[in-house]
Image (cartoon, rainbow over the protein chains, first blue to last red):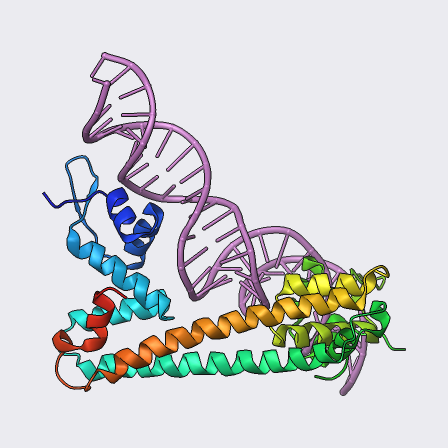
Amino acid sequence: MASWTVGQLAKRAGVGVETVRFYERKGLLAVPERKPSGYRQYDEEVVDRLRFIKRAKELGFTLNEIKELLSLRLDPTTTCADVKKRSAEKIDDIEAKIRTLQRMKKALVKVTKACRGRGGTCECPILEALDREG
Amino acid sequence: MASWTVGQLAKRAGVGVETVRFYERKGLLAVPERKPSGYRQYDEEVVDRLRFIKRAKELGFTLNEIKELLSLRLDPTTTCADVKKRSAEKIDDIEAKIRTLQRMKKALVKVTKACRGRGGTCECPILEALDREG
DNA sequence: CTACACTCCGTACCATACTACGGAGTCAAG
DNA sequence: CTTGACTCCGTAGTATGGTACGGAGTGTAG
């Protein structure tokens, strides 16, 4: 029968056993049925859900956001537009992060270019730039 | 005389008092002289150092990296090239982060475009995409 | 001289996402 | 029927960068 232990589930989804328990505690995975021994029992759907979580994480959603996403899906009154809105917000987040990193990079490149890479640190333009007003 | 309390220092550098104590514990700030009362005593140099830390943080260095940067500066045997190397590594880090974010954004945009933003979540292409293989 | 702001200290707590530990019970192969 | 792998549980630790707390002592303005 298609019933998996936590270890089998974890392996199939490519995460650790402790991670499954952690997600359960955090409410990302439903509390599973138990065998008489107390062992957790999972079916195929949970593998799918774990993979959903993995992919959403790869897309930059935090666990809390993923939890929301999952509950959106369960709620019959939420619309596709709700989900689209979350995604759009996440795209904005990502764009903001990219802009910040590009600013950081630009400043670092500028400062690095001024350095001829020789001599002691006393004359290092990188450290001097950090010393001065940004 | 130019001697500041921890609160004055924090204010001048634009950080919190607890942050100063935190940096001291982490070894980013030297253990300061104390007044007979036990109050920490700071001079202008520490303001500069705190600002150095702030700017390095803005450039994407972690506190540990900043600590290294600061010790590089104090060590007379390190060269400007050493510092330049750190900066180059940091630029690589930043570029890698940007690439990752751009991949995430692309995937999200693709999935969002497929969504016409209407109907229930049963037919939401965004959630479906997360369900399927990435 | 009193009131109030500031400082001292260690410790605990915040969020994020796990990972590890240890002792006890369970399952399956040989 | 033993052995070894797996599972149970709660708690604690990891890394990051701080923030908050509380009781005691200090500094200073009025």
